[in-house]
Length: 181
Image 1: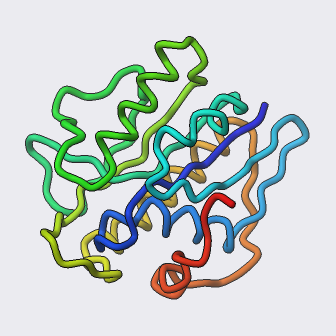
Image 2: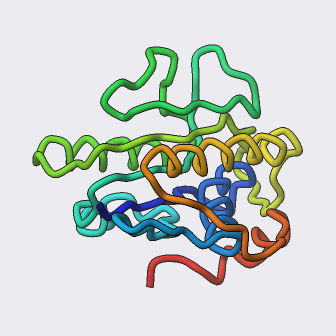
Image 3: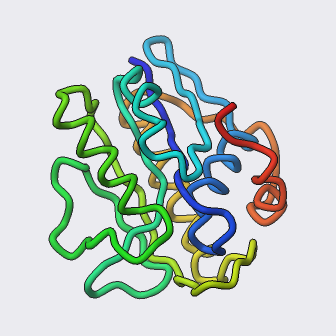
């Protein structure tokens, strides 16, 4: 099985870059091993629809992104199957979420969406001013998000090996240099 960890986000808007930053962090920190599966990690940024041909190449997807909720607080983490989005997830209010939701829905309508899990966090949504800085709440929540992803991979039979000690903030400083090439 081909597994994709897909980081989504706009790194120019603080917390909304967490999907990208966490994907890059996982890529630096871990190697993944399985006799039956492969794992790829991609920084999808804000590409949304342009990710369709990439997403459809995989058998299982883990999307790391921000979510908006009716009742959530900044830093609250959610893990759910895209086929069963909780009623309190609204997906609105960010620079990228609606497009990614529409992208996944389009792939689903075509019948090409593999099983897809969402690991999302409620961000502090900034206005018009851009910043590369994430809030402390979201940085703390990234630890739980990382654990959820590693445990989900383990449930699939994929072991994770820590190959590098690194810091999310340090990785985030270079996220603008990465992305789908």
